[in-house]
Length: 260
Image 1 (cartoon, rainbow, N blue to C red):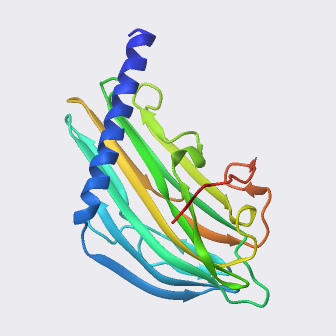
Image 2: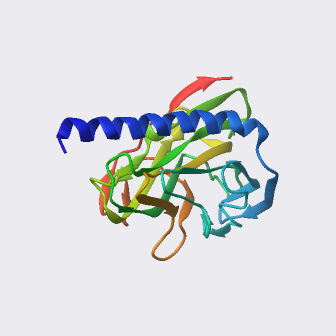
């Protein structure tokens, strides 16, 4: 098979993924019932009104009930996956919503860090049109700082271009046969735009897609070898950080900002 043909098939798969993302966004208006997890308290921050709603694909709960460790909100999903075979495709997506409030003496929300992990399996006789895709996006709205309610809420938006994936977020049968592990990390430097924030609202969209051909099968899931699969961490000081899982040192990613 020529390299040009392979690239064309990969572009086709990515275009289909983009179309599915749009379909999922439209379907969000008719999403399933919301699963409410309520309020959880950390060492210096409270995680309030934690809830999830499936936007398309499998019904909730997908993230599952969270736990708190220090200033981290931890999730251990067991059925957040998408799989396809025989020429079909599958998509699974959910939105997580919560509000984070500083409660410790002098505590401020200077940055938020998200890490998650999973794997994908591609098998059969086919082309790069068989593949999987993971997508992350959402908003972070700063509501208050140490002086009280902000006159105008500051809204950060983020998507896949702000996320550091390892080895990537798009996989195909030609380049990634068999099982491949993947990781994702997002670091939003809130203090760079709103110093001393004390209350923020988070809307986090997480989507998985799987595409297949007549003689192939594909699957992708959120899965950790050990420990939590998805971690939200409130970072007390902005700057560099270490992702232990991959040994990478990454710089803070300033998110795009808009005004309400």
